[in-house]
Image (cartoon, rainbow, N blue to C red):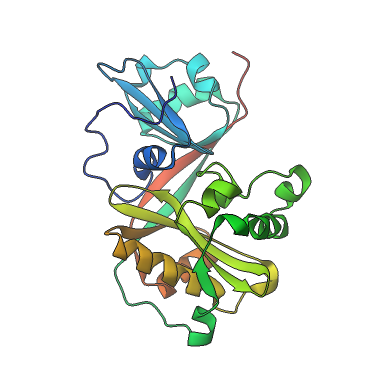
Length: 258
């Protein structure tokens, strides 16, 4: 079963920073969906969107055949789901993410730099296509979407979402900050920058725009970064984010023959 209207559960209330935003993001973006053992009496729930997978409930109510249908991806799940993942996928790689919340005054950028930033619109899709080719070799080879757009369903959906802000140098989209996951109470920010335009404070200027827009909408900006990604964490601190906790995600795949 895969729909955009999630069954009523209390598992995502109150909404916390991190992977739990995925449920509300599916409803907001109309991309992705969910599976449950019983919509009327939910005991196991899988929410999926792009490469993200969120598991909750009783793993005994799931079997590898069901899980395999959703393919490889990044699973956010309690440890009790690990035996099920092991029966479904050939490889499981854990990695630790540091969750940040926007609580401090950010480091300022120049007015000149800030003036290059604006919201993205549908006509900016070719600019995002170029940025994707410039920053992701696999996209250049396969013509697929940049990872930053996968939770929206592609470049067109991200540019029309109302949750993406870019720094434009002439015709070029040099940097982009967006709501990778947008929940009811939080907006988790992701950033991508053309390698040719790094170290110019463009990413920081885009994050300024994203956090200001989130606050204006009554959303708390958050930031998720791998623990060993020092560049991402340094940018988060410069933008006024502070670490609040860690969580473990599991990259799983490919699927075993079931």
